[in-house]
Length: 219
Image (cartoon, rainbow, N blue to C red; front, side):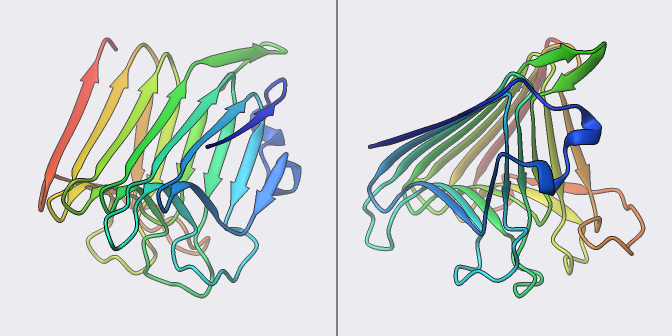
């Protein structure tokens, strides 16, 4: 089992640049290949995938088992105005860069709360800038909770003509997203990963080839 905690006082919106992230990594895999992992980002920030080339086409996985069915369990908690930014490798255009719950794995992303600093409200937030899949393959469970004024942003992969920024429940997997509480928000957008692209409305795929659910409550 593994546990990593990043802590801080929360950053203002202007401070949330890649160069100011507390931790910058090429890729991040939590709770994979039969392991158990927990990552807490409390008022701090982590930037994943912005460093360019990675041997794994997916720069981010949370709760991913092996091809032989050995499950992994992963949890990430983003609290206290913390931020996680997941980009895609420049060498994997069109590949969805992030997955939560795959190959009989169990992955849970919990984003909760906000803080007020110098009169500015700073939301806890997660950003997936190159697509996201939640609950992929039979026996897999993926979940996201956006609570108490937190924020989730998903953007379509840069060659996805359908502009689907997130797939919830894929290939007989089970995926769920809960958005609950005042000012909690999920922003889904299209081809915004490439700076020269015009902002486009994003779409969601929920349960198209698996079991998917989206719950919006207590807003």
